[in-house]
Image 1 (cartoon, protein in one colour):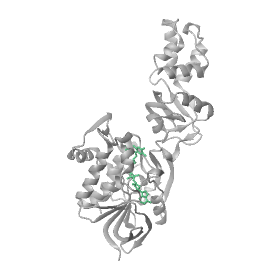
Image 2 (image 1 turned 90 degrees about the vertical axis):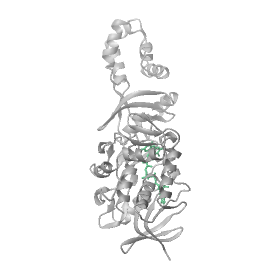
Image 3 (image 1 turned 120 degrees about the vertical axis):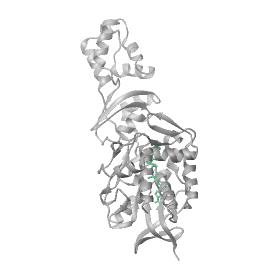
Image 4 (image 1 turned 120 degrees about the horizontal axis):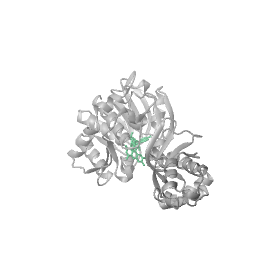
Length: 393
Ligand code: FDA
């Protein structure tokens, strides 16, 4: 005899738990299945262990998708204020680390605890270390063959996330199910991910590992003004993670190391007003010491400003305002925060998240082709899509 539930949700991550508690409170019998040994692993590791759980300034413009309109409805109905209201009800203390970006003041564990408590109050069953072997349509519902036996459900919600961090339980399960039911899957790639560099630049970055400086970076249609961090393998930090969502193999990054300052004008003026100052001193006023020293080494030139020709200053200005850096690649799924692309939204309702013509099958969260920028937007999408779906089950 198959076990029966109104709703079975596959994936006990941010979207799955939020959908489960919403449907549970609406009176549905809900089971959440996850193959991992713990729920919400990505919540726990997010935001450096403090989870940047929303962004108060969330708008649809913060998301990438082949269909940019798809996210509008859910984001409008479940806003960051709603999630804040939920966590405040549980007394969670949080901090606004950057404008709009809310993080747990303590640990991401506190946030996961809230979701699990709410699931408990809503009567949700959660089965971990459980795999789904087969999913088939069964009359007006669905049937699942799982490692805990056969289950029949009025509806199945796929909340299995994207491909990033396979060691945390990420799989292509959701994409396989989508294809099984005739849905398209938009090409996936790692995003919000550090860049790797080739030999000469890799060695230079390695020597500067841990040094950070604010830059303006451009690639294709994207541009961000945020800190860049040198790492043992390349470059990271918010600026690089953000621009990785625009970057394609072979692209160069256009990096302005002195955002907001015209380097040529500033150097020319400094040569006039402080001619005995060394270039390295001038750089040292603008960059961390190690980076200033490295810039001099890379450029192969120092000296007092008075002895710098116009051509020399122009070369320096180009390096500082228009540094062109060609990444070898990215760190890939091992460290990427999100998956760009995913289940194509064209056959999914933006109101209920059901598959057109098969309302008993739904997709929510990161498995869909909706990807947020860095800054709490991806969790806001998980909450918003989950609530919209959960309310309609
Ligand atoms: P999520 O990946 O959270 O959950 C999917 C669940 O499905 C997992 O529990 C997994 O085990 C399970 N699953 C997968 N395959 C399965 C299968 N075959 N059978 C059963 N279960 C299966 N975002 C943000 O807004 N702010 C932040 O601070 C951060 N920080 C951050 C740091 C790091 C290191 C990462 C990797 C990611 C972030 N993110 C983030 C992104 C954010 O974590 C992500 O967008 C959401 O967790 C997506 O929520 P979902 O519920 O859709 O998937």
